[in-house]
Image 1 (cartoon, rainbow, N blue to C red):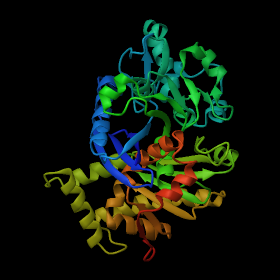
Image 2: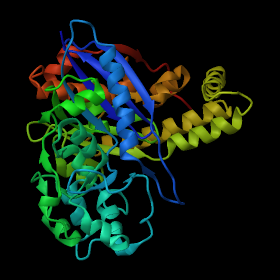
Image 3: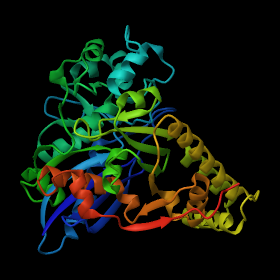
Image 4: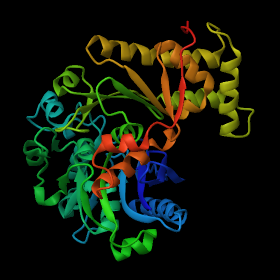
Length: 442
């Protein structure tokens, strides 16, 4: 039996699945991430420690494989955008700077000279702001010039993990979008930004499509993970496009709502210009053979909810118990109630509806909505959302691990098990439940 390993490198956790070729999830694993905050505004991680946690997840998945399983490949997807410098031997030159790091947020010296923000957005696909690797690299060049000059390679932490597994350096076009140095349409490094940073292409990993085989698991990688030496190491994607693959959200009219630290709407779109006009985040997704991906984000939702839950239900000993009380309070309150728990859920649902309605007016319709993330575990919240949006919500069985399933699908494409995402979706099918609107939420 052919099986695949898919990994989702999340902001709060590393998740993994063992996926059978027929679409069954044979095993799931999760390990909490370990972030370091050495100073106000700074968020970092140890690439070596993060790789150890990744290996723990993979070893547990391999250990759960049936006796007749043949592990064909592994792919890594996730919340990329974490800057890392490498020496000539491929070892990290320090910690990875996390995408949430804000050390350069108020420093105009990191803005690319002579390159307008609109030109950056059109080239790389994400609106310019002072975050993510482009700006983090500029900050390192200014503040740690010796370190920046000594770096043989500038990349991300996922690049390190792939190198540890295969001995090769590479980056997929989806993850490269968050790196902010790729011309998204031309699918190559963007020369004006490289010139401004003083980076030659020889100091960057090679760019390949999601689902491309980067290399094979080395003897060292096999010893660290339990994977068979020679298994394919396949390039994944950014977390939301990967989750869309895992949920079968592949064509215009379908929408993935991914609700975690931020609430993200992911739309497959045929026209990149339409996404640019709406100031959405753009992912290569299935282009050039299929649609682009367009994303909007309601930021810091998770922080707001957690602060409310912790303050309102402080008497509960555990986080799980607090969230259970949160759901119970909202479920008991009738529609239109001023109960604080229900009011918070309804307010966030209303914000989602307002954003989706504006996109619908611009031509981005939501004919089928698939939802993943923590709120899907709350029956009250799902009903409020369905009522507010006036639409059915499809809740996949593997929602919390949708990104890892998407990564496993890309591993299957790289090894020839799946012809493409549509073939994988047909085999995997929809396993889950549907929440239907019962009436408008007021």
